[in-house]
Amino acid sequence: MNVDPTVRSIRIATTLNERFGAILKEAASGHTVAEFELRIGEAQQIYPEIWRHLDQARAALAQRGIVVPPYDSLRATERPGQLAVDNIEHSEGINPLGLVFGRLQYVETKTATFNHEGHNKARQACDALMEAMPEVDWRAVAQAEDAEIAAMGSLRSAKWRQVAVIAAVIIAAYLAFRLFG
Image (cartoon, rainbow, N blue to C red):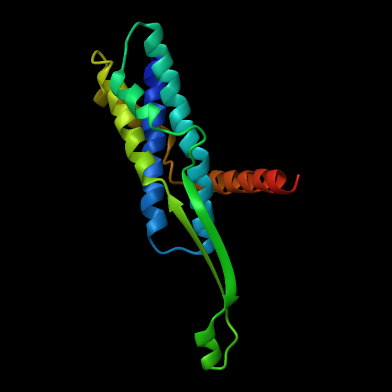
């Protein structure tokens, strides 16, 4: 499928932001510390990519002489280096209730603040850029993408989980390098 690069950038940003929204919902549900860490890692990787693709689309529109004040206003409120997740806290300890029953039980918890506002801003930014291109049948583009994905197989396969795990490992290695290197 041959798609205008600007349309492609907007669709990639939209798809990534939809995934970010799913991560926000998944993070709010019950999870193990390891699963939660995967959500954090995936969100941290996805969030800057959303804005990178949106900025690419905005720059391409500017080259065509198309101004998008709603996007520019939203973008101005997004801090440089804004993260998808912050206030990450990790704790380990002994479960005092377990001691009452004569068992030594270790517990591990992790908490974090996910950027729900950034998700909403990115959705509005996607909408603003799409509205700047009324000649594009966005529904048809999305349907064509869905058909192409269906022809290749599901994105919810084990391969997707493997990619998420690999991404988490890469992020952990990078953070360790930044902290200790």
